Length: 380
Ligand SMILES: *Cc1c(COP(=O)(O)O)cnc(C)c1O
Image 1 (tube, rainbow, N blue to C red):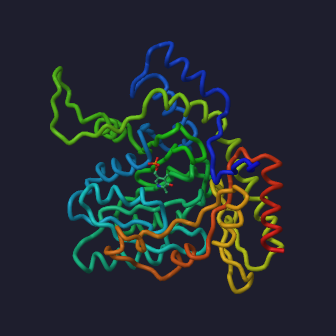
Image 2: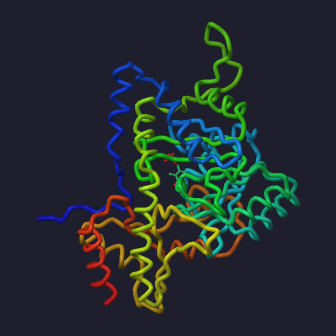
């Protein structure tokens, strides 16, 4: 008999999702618009709001949100866009959709996110070469906020708009301010493996009603105001479905609970590895940081432990437990390796020695016991 699979990050329904979907069926709003879309947007706005104006547009994916962010910022063919190298490829692909050129920047060791020094070095060098970057894409990996004070100060100093890829960080905050609201434009994802899911979906977070209307205009095929179908700009089919948004409304009711359950998984691993010399868990640098701990990542020091992250991954796999290497940096990816890169080998070493551990909000006591058994067998 094979053991039940423990996933790295599994969907976790709260219970009320289906009633929102039922409402959509009852009222025949089976379309990429309707009351659930507006309700989900307003739930997100309330959640992110902190005295400042926050406007949210619900979209078909986080990738679509990054693409629209670049379009709203006027990024086009031949422009350069700075992007954190250590991330999921969806952060960088939309740069190429626009015919623009990515410039990759290394991570720093405290949060594993964009290194402020390497960012400034990249900006200065690109300006010296005559092509000032049009935007910066920084990412809160695994829910850990990037060094927001430093990164936003550099963006401001050089007057380059910041796109905040908060796809993994809904529910995280830095100095009490919610992730998704630091950039000129923020991006959220509700893919199946994220902290809340709409099965697939995303959102763009902007600072004015005008910009939100503009994003929704592009997301609904850029239709001009006319009785016939009239178009003066390129359009996209990027709006969220009213069915998916119904799942999102149900998920918003359990978001904070999911955050505490993901943090519980992180506390379990931090506690476990505090007794093992040579394993480092990604943790909040100080009390300014609050991570949703979407995924718990560790780095294994091969010399100290005599083990590799790949050995641990295989030990989990034997027990039908999913774990996964950290994101492979974009500057090491075949599709992106020809583009400029600034930094050293921080992100490359994280990739080499790192592993993401099962972090779902629906892990059971029995799951925790199985995880502990594998770890005990592996390290002792
Ligand atoms: C998931 C993710 C995205 C893309 O979101 P989708 O909704 O899957 O398109 C972008 N950036 C990061 C860092 C992600 O983890």
